[in-house]
Amino acid sequence: MNYFRWFIIILILGLLLIHIPAEAGEPSDQNEWFSKEEKLLITNAGGIAILTTWGIMSWDYGERSSHTRSEGWFEQDAPEGGADKFAHFYASYLASHGISALCESWGYSVEKSSLYGALSSFGLMSFIEVGDSFSHYGLSFEDFSMNTLGCFAGYFLYRYPEYSRKIDFRVEYIPHFSVKDMSTDYENMKFLLAIKTSGFDAIENQYLQFLEYHIGYYARGYSDDEKEKRRNLYVGIGINLSKLFSDLSFRKSSKIFNYYQFPFAYLQVKRELPK
Image 1 (tube, rainbow, N blue to C red):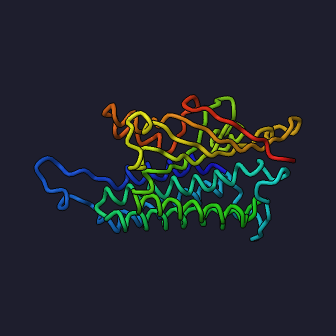
Image 2 (cartoon, rainbow, N blue to C red):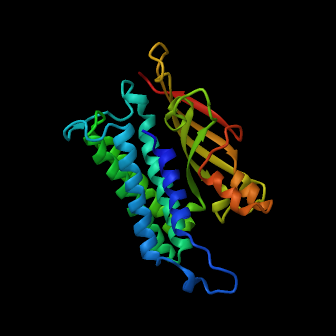
Image 3 (cartoon, rainbow, N blue to C red):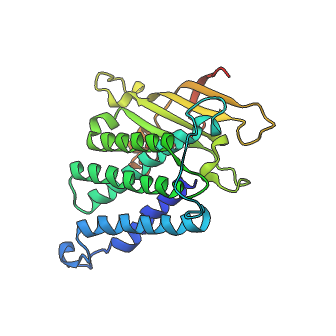
C-alpha cells in the first residue's frame, strides 16, 4: 500500500488549499479565508477524498464484501517478514507529526496540535483499513494495531519535546528507481529507534553530544521467492546529523534527519533472527 506517498500528498494538498498568506501591511487574522478549525476539517476531508478516489481506482475498494484477515507479525513466513508492520507504524507517526506541525502553524497550541495531529492520522489510517476490508487486502488487525501505536508515539513525542530531544523514529532508504513503487520497497528499507546523546543534559562533552545509538529492524529476500528470507535486528552507533546541520545554521532543513536516517552515517552490528 502507498502510505508514504499518499500521506505526503495529503499534507501538501492541505498547504496548497488552505494556507492563504496575508497581503503586505494587512493583519493575517483579517485575511484568512478559513479559521484554524475549518482548516483542520478541510485537511482531513481532503485526505479522505483522495484516499477514497485512489482506493477505488487502484486498491479495488468496493470489489468485495467486508472481511478481515490475519497477516501475522514478524514471523519468518509473515508477509515482508514484518517490515510492512514497521512501515504502518512509521507512516502513522510521520502523518501525526506532519498534521501537528500544520496545526501549530495555524495557531493551535502544542498541546492541541499534538492531539489533533494524532487523531487525524489515526482517523485517516483507520479509514484506509476500513477501505481495505472491502478489497482483496482485507482489514488486518496487525496493521491497525501498528497504526495505533504510531499515532500514539507521534502524539507523545510532539506533545513532550523533552522526550523528542532524546529519541527519534526513522526510516533508512536509498531510492531504487527500478522498482515500481518505492514506498513499499521494504527490501531496501530499515526502520529504527535512535537515542540521541544530545538530549541528555548529563552529557556535557560537546563531541559526545554528536553521537547517537540505534536499535533497528529490517527484512531481506521477501521480494523474490528464490532468495533466502532473512529478518535482522541490529544495534549501531552513528552521528547525529540533525544536530550537526542545526549547529551549522541549517535549523529547518536539519529536522529531516529526525525522520530519515542517512545510510552512511553509522556503524552497525546485526543479528539474524532464527527461522
